[in-house]
Length: 374
Ligand SMILES: C[S@@+](CC[C@H](N)C(=O)[O-])C[C@H]1O[C@@H](n2cnc3c(N)ncnc32)[C@H](O)[C@@H]1O
Image 1 (cartoon, helix red, strand yellow):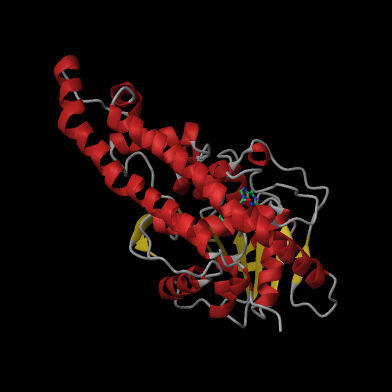
Image 2 (cartoon, rainbow, N blue to C red):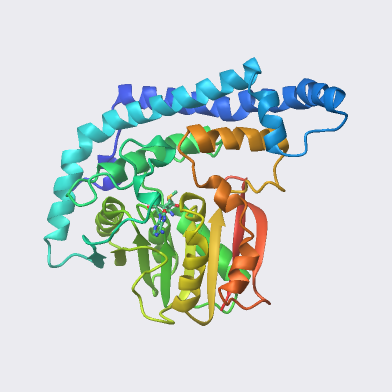
């Protein structure tokens, strides 16, 4: 009998212990240590700045030189950096050990004429830059590692790290690296917001390894669910995973700004944490493409990071800026400084339905939600 994928991706006891340590370390850095830095800024550094300049720092550019020499800030930086190294080191152990089994399984599925759904790869796709050459989160090799070969390591590394990030960001630990609940929660949220919605065709843009697309299919079994991503290893992994779960999904390797689907093809287009991981110049083009792909009245709904400068404090902006520069998050700033509602209107969405808001989802953490209707 074939072992299900969530049982196949099992760290050994030693790997699990190391990964647990990294998760706990990251939770400490993102929680207590970060709060200490912010507190110190407000209690000591900001008053000192004010005493010297006669006014408070008004933006991160003024606050960066205030925080940079501070030992607490430096401790935060070095711990963020080294915990990230440890994350990849320990996830890499599990991935190296299990990769041959996953690669073999993907090869078997892709050769099976009775497999569920479709997988459309585009070996000629030129990765848009700088996306293609960026190692997001400093993931070794990035999302596109061995893009043109039958090697799922980029997808396995990503999937393996998600559970550690979950602990690190203070989400509840799910303990199942193949969790699809995000898609089911999103379907529920969409059905609540748009009660008339009865989707027949759904697209997840920047679907990654497919967790959300899988959950959407579980929630809306009658719908044809598609997932699109630039990364070949990611969509191959998603195709394998969908078959493992007995779900008929349609995966495509493509640029969300130039997807290749016909006009008006979808009732619903969604994305989760795509926009802060794509080059900000792509944003308007992806919105125009989503508008083109939706049928009239169709829904575009996006979940992303809540780090807009008017939403977070100045010391938090300095910390984010450090992550942008040093820890593999180069696209955060471009996204957080984009006026998404304006871009959506320019892309042609109905002004009556365009929204951008903050809402706590998935374990109570706040996200930035934006979207609209055609
Ligand atoms: C943080 S991952 C999110 C994956 C998935 N949505 C999830 O929630 O796990 C961002 C994804 O966006 C993809 N991506 C970035 N720019 C893209 C683009 N222009 N077109 C398609 N996919 C893109 C990346 O390859 C990556 O898989």
